[in-house]
Image (cartoon, rainbow, N blue to C red; front, side, top):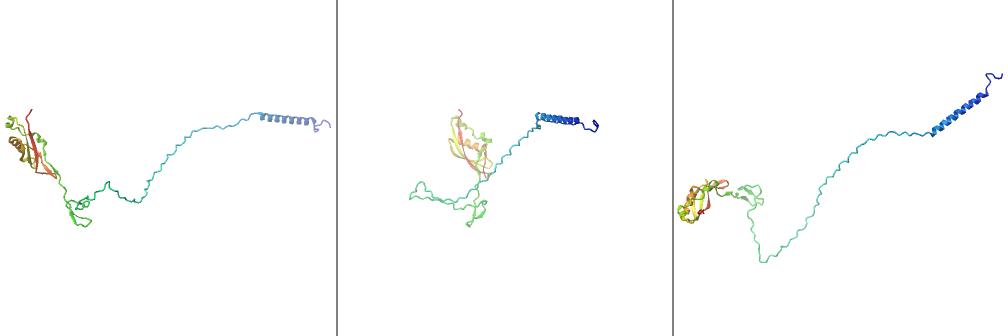
Length: 223
């Protein structure tokens, strides 16, 4: 039966082929168009962070060890010739101390035995500390005696030297004349010394002792 429902149509097959061809052409064109498009590169975002560089550690200086000195062998001793030869008839004499040196730590007056077994030796006591008598400065203005009237009337001048004995209290106990221009000058000096002169007494190891002292007085007119 011509033109029935179940009879295939040639026009439909041609249309299907045409549709498929169109789709293939479209896909090909689309693929070619994408190939011409520029490709965008993806660049990741960078973050910059400044990290400080740690300083260099301090330099450690090695401790120098003291160098040990090498022991050297003792050198030979050479005799040195004196700068000049002594004459044949000359001689040098010397006297050694007969008393041996006492050991350290010995006290004066203590008996010690020396290593040489020379017997006990008694050390001499130390020398005493002596201080001479001095003029007491509190009485310095009283040293000059009054001018004798007889010598003053005659405008005589003179000098007197005396040796005085000073007691442990600083007072003058005795006066002896060494020299004097006149007897009047000496008498005036003697009276002044016995009554007015004062001294700081001499001392031995801090203890006051009696002593003597030479004093000179000058008598001179005022000009």
